[in-house]
Amino acid sequence: MTNNNASFLPNVFGLWGIKEELKLIHSWYLDPSSINERKSMLPRGLLFFGAPGCGKTLLAREYSKLFNCPVFEIEGNSDDVQKELVETSEKASKEDMAIVVIDEMDKLIHKDDKLARILQAQLDGFKQRLSVLTLATANERFEIPEPLRREGRFDRQFFVEFVCKEETEEALRNFLAVAGLSINEEDIPELVDEFFGDTPIHIRSAIFGASLRKGDACTAEDILDSSYFLHEGIMPKKEDLEVSKATAIHEAGHAAYLHFYARSISYGRIYFTSRGGFTTIQRQKKTSTFESVNERIQCDLAGLVAEELLLGHHDYGSHIDLDDAHNTAYQLVNMEALNGVGEHCTRPAYQEPSGQLSQIKVHRLEVASEKYVLSQYKKTKRKLRRVKKDILRLYAFLLENKKASKQDIARILGPVR
Image (cartoon, rainbow, N blue to C red; front, side, top):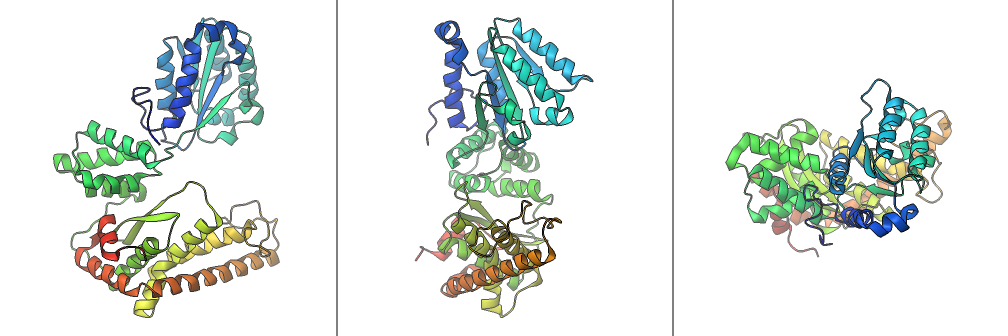
């Protein structure tokens, strides 16, 4: 994927596919023939949805500036939001061209269910007048009633998310430039791998946080530590850390599985804190398949398996990974992903079963998921037994260095056989 619109919305990083469509819509609104002859065909509402911090509000506000027309914002801060909505819409409709921006529309509707019907009426009224374009943001698209989301009201709905590592890299390099940081070029790929899947606000906060702590001496490792702090709420402490054999072997097992056998997920770096060891992973694809979920279960089990292969037992800390494997397996069974063993349940598998399931059915689900984890454990053990020597080499490196970058892991484990 390439960025063909580098100069379009320059303050919004990545999101190249969305920018392409927004640029086209912008050109339609600037074309007099579209306004005069094809007015009824123009998109009248654009909805930007996605996780908090993904840049929805920035995208809507930056886009609204391109039209050189009055912009009216509805944030729902007034005592009477219904009145604010109607009055703002009436002001916009008196302009030859206007933009109405509704921030966090899902939350506004949740506070007052009458707002959805009022907003529908306003959007329908805009179609009878001159050009009014409505830009709305939401965290959860499906929290917005379907009649409001249908075509003719919100004609275009954009999932705001980086879809490729190149978009993540663009944001990373721009935030580094804003912070005035110069990072070794060979460290950029590891940072991109680490941040792929994170929101722009997380990337920016990690970089700015590292810059504040370290100043001009800031390194890629400092940025990764800052990212970890944002996720976990504690800074990694590597100095004077005693790395136990079990912890080092455990993390080497995760990395070896990911290096030699995984295709849908890949490893980042290994590091240790006072809370234990961590191997960062990244999903290679946004969509989950049966095979990719199995890989995740086997990856969760790989640390425990490595300890048992090389030490004859596993440490208490492995129970977290084992719980993750069981939860994922339970979900597969629960959603009938395994032929003949599932009992359908509308609640997510990681939550407590609701009263709609009998105790007998709950027991069947638990037994089936335990059997499935055992089968994946055996497969993982057969795989890691073939690469025991590789795990030992990485283990020795970890004991000495207390950490390993992605490049270190690839060098030590060697080519995939």
